[in-house]
Image (cartoon, each protein chain N blue to C red):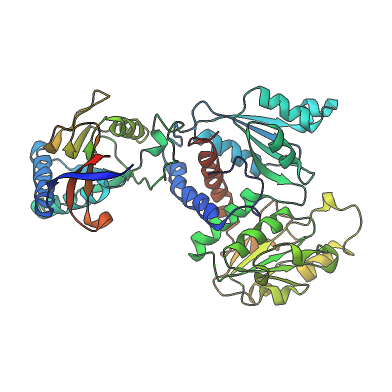
Length: 180
Length: 312
């Protein structure tokens, strides 16, 4: 499958600005309560790290961090063509009664978040579970919505939203690509 | 994992070995959770078919399967139709007809898992066949070594004891030489297999032999002790247990020859006072219980890689 660039959705500056806006919204909605930022592998992790850094500077208190790999909870594991590589899961020890923010790059069918919710249940009973994403591109297959959205766009399902972050991809940018 | 079965280390590539170890490392975290279970292999059936006594390997596979939510069924030879005279092949075909997804087999005859693998749709994992291979043991040993030493290449690994009867020695020799470590096989002349130098085909420059434990241990990073397998010995291989311990038993004095931070391994079960002194087995450099924990993670990784993605 080849991909052709349709258009650039965000530049490096917009990526950074959007992350800071998301972090500010999380702080204000949670009214000063300590939150735990849980990045979903893989691009949710650097997103959560940067947001945590921003919240730390703003409020003087660094929020707890964690990472989650949802591959062991996928509902299509026996059907996918190539076997997924399982990355690290690290959840802070005492997550009961905390406000947890799941962080992922793109909200699409909702199945990744669905799997993340199934995974989180095994770690305790959180006070709330909220969701922050860079891009909501529609086409949901499950009743799942995000609490914090960087940019909401309309896409065709032949398109791919590609979030690129310096830590993984060497640049900050978001592109919308077309499958050809 | 591309292959249908896991029968030995000999046929694995270094990439496949590292894929299993990397996956095992990420799955280790599951065993530390308050709820030690993920739903990944829901609806898969794993049958443990053990024709030889085993505590840790069978339990380890059972726990690994259950932590991934597979249904694990244990069949041991003494309580099955095998004791009524059923052949290995008929037993295997029967289990296949019950739609098992995976059969984990241990058998006293080398090649038994290979025979079953050819006749079943189920994926077959060799949990030890005669004196041939014990691939999951070598993989858990490798994970333990990598986590302690930070690498699998450029190490000196002494494997000491009953080499002739040991599938653990064979699987470890294959794995460690493939990864670029020097393996020193050390045993009494009567317990060294005749064709030891043909054990590994490629990388044979990494395989060495000695009858002197001092030579094997000199500057070693890893000391792997093997159990003296009295149950496989139909003749006398050494004069007495006391004499064996004097020449080939691991004592604190002998450990001194290895590197200061060397680790001591044993696949278990141990014969304390035969191949290893109690103060060494329970000492600060012993990683014997780490090996057991690594075993669960490695077997989870193998079950996940074999049953998780799309296969047949």
